[in-house]
Every structure is written in C-alpha cells, then in structure tokens.
Image (cartoon, rainbow, N blue to C red; front, side, top):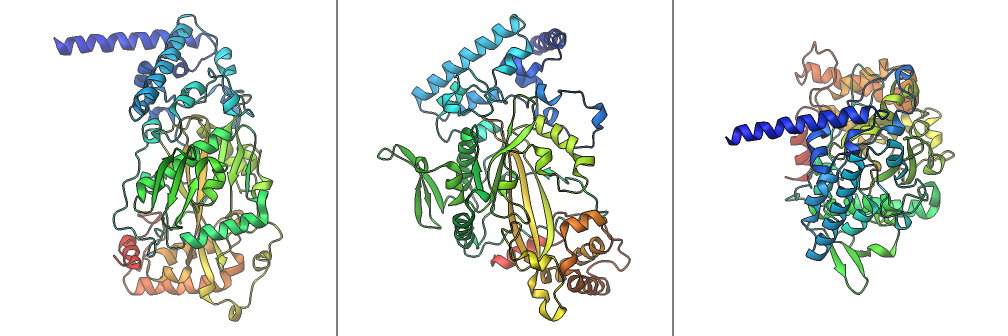
Length: 514
C-alpha cells in the first residue's frame, strides 16, 4: 500500500509539473524553475540539467534575448538547510522570511504572474544591496531580506551544494609545494578544457605563502587601481566571495586559520597563524581582506538584468601578463577575452550560454600555460620585463635554469546567494628542468612548440625561449624513449593523467618530505 501511495504522489507531481510547464510556456517561455515553490523546483532542477556542457554554438541559431530570460537553477531549497546552523532567533526569522516569500511565489503562480514582472524585481545592477528592496531577487532566486537574515558567514556548504574541504592533515606550510600541474594537450587547439573542481583544492597554499602575500601587497602599493577595483553594485558579491574564501581556509587548514566574533569590534575577526596577525573583517573592504590573506587572483563577474550578460565588476588581479585590471574592469565577458585567439569565433557564444546557466553546485577548473624567463608575476604594458619577450637572449645569457613553466591554474564557480560568477587563478612557476624525469612531458611540450597552431603560439609568446628550451626538451624526450620511461614508438598525445603525469603524486610527496 505504501508503494502504491508513493506512485500516486509521483503521478500527481508529474501532472502538476506538466500543467505548470504548459501554462508558463504560453507566456513567452517563462523559466518554470523561477516560479515553482521550492519543494517542486528541487524535484525539477538538478545541477546536471541546469548547467549545460560547454560546446560550440551557431550565433545565427541563438535566439535574440536568450540570455536576458535565462537564469541559473534557484537555490531556494538550500535555504532551510543553511538555517540549521543559525541561532534560534535568527533561524526563526529566516524561516518566516522564507515562508512569506514561498506564499508570494505560490500566489504568483496561481495568478500567472507575467515573466516581465519577475525579471524587473531582480537586484539592480549598480545598486548597493544594503539599500535594495527586501523583496528584490538575486539571479539564484534568493531575496535581499533572506540574505540579510542569514547574516555574516552563513553555511556556504549548504547554500551552494559544494562540499566544504576536508582538513589537510599533516600539512606544513614550510614544506608545501603546489601540485605539479601540466595542462598540456595534443592535438593542441583552443578550447576551454574544463573539468570538475575538486572541493579540497579550490585555494591551494604553498611554502611561498608569506613571500607571495607581501609581494602582492607591495605591487598594490605601487599600482593601486591597476590591480584592485570594485564598481558600484558589487558590494555584496565581494563580501560573499571573501566569506567563502575565509571559510575555506579555516576548514582546510584549521591549524593555521580561524574565525571568531568580537563583541568589542562588533565584527568577525580572522586569525592568520602563518602571518601571525588578525584582520577585523568590518575594518576594510572584502577585497582588501583577500589581498592581505589569500595569494590568489579573483575576478567578480555579475549579471546585468538588462541584457542577461556578465560583466567584470570587481577584482583583485596581481598576476597578469601584458594587461591589468584597469583595462578590463566594467567590460562584458566577450570583451574581457577579446585578445584570445579563436575566442570570438569558437568560444564566445558557448561561454555566454555557460555563464547563463552554470549552477552553484558545479564549479570547474582548467589550466593555462606559457614559458617565461625567470618568474614575472605582474607585467602590465611597459613593464621592463617585456624586453625579454620582444627578442631572444643569446644562449650563453639564457641558461635552462632561467626558463620556467608558468601555469595559471584557474577555477570558475557561481556564488550561491548573489549569483555572481567568480573566476580565480594562481600563477605557479616550475623550472622546465623538472620535466626531465616526468614521463611524456618533454615529448608533448616539444610537439606543441614545434607544431602548435601559429596564432595560439604567438599569443603564448614562447618564441623568446624556444631556441634554448626546445633542444633540451627533444633531448629529454629521446632519453625517456631510450630508457623505457615511455615507449620508443609512443605517438605524442594528451597524457592520460592530464593535468598531471604518470607518477606525479610520488614525486610531489617526495618534494615535501612525506
């Protein structure tokens, strides 16, 4: 009988969804998930169905105004779970706010609220969330009143659907080395080459932490707005990003970082055991909190309700080569990426579509790479280091020890409450001499340098080191084939372990002494 009853409930549920879908489709293809009560939206929407695969699209087949009407999957079902960690009074207040909005949603559904009314109630693009109407929505379907009720440092694991990181047992900052990313591919052509983000590795610390933090602070003191900016309307997005990053550090590295609440300061305080200092959160802008504590770059992309497109509205970029934040701030996604070969022709429409639907529970990662002389971190136009890239040093002035692989290890994720998309990356440098004992790596890098697409290789600008790097890579490739490290007849292809190499973990652990 219980099974029969369950089947009847499922049939009723399916019928309701079908009826609602039909009614709303008659009203200009309204997004069903935006209007359904949370229990029903949860049944209908899943991260897999809401975040599309990234593939090429035909611009002529993209309906006009598509992105303006497209929103990511709502996270309203997650609010009740996030409320469980709140104090009783705060939890009760949030529950009442949720129930009130739930009732409004159901009334809207019954009265066939036009899509235009809902879309006009999204958070204004350039308005501070603190002065917004409490009934205004974020793109993920949460109201400003609900956001305010959640307070500072809510349960972002529950809200986003992304697991919090596990504590990194045995981690010692003095010996820590970043994982040896080798994001090489063959055949080599321009794609985003995305994979799922591993929650434990969103922010990765290494033994250069103190040096990197101080170096970034020095760069900001020198370059200011070329490296850190925040435009009106990005206030909450920056706050949410900062809270998620600090929560991550405290969970992943609990023996170094912690958060406490100070009644005296009326603010949370972040305790940094590596730098041996404290940051009163409310004493500075969230991006400055990140500058002084997290050695990674962040770009905050926010949806404009007018056109549904994403714009760079805030960021802290200390590791750019050939550009700076001042040249990109305020631009639409496609314009930010304009210099990248094949982006407009092959990837722009796909990325716009991906940003429109990306769910909060499906963060991704990828790697970009190049070869550099020494380890330049920030190199805006006119920087003295540009001289190295405009010519070739004689081999006697360019020993192999000066040539480094630079990997920008990048992640992309949607913030649950604001709906902003965060692009962050960290520049990692490795002497190319490390490649010698890494199976298949010399061969694939040599192949890309010799035969990679001309426009892409010019963009990477590896030309200035190839006259020294390529002969060494080819020699190491022959050495690996002769020594049986790789098969003699091995046809160069993307490594099976990409973005790593066979045996990488053993080498990585030996470098750290465990």
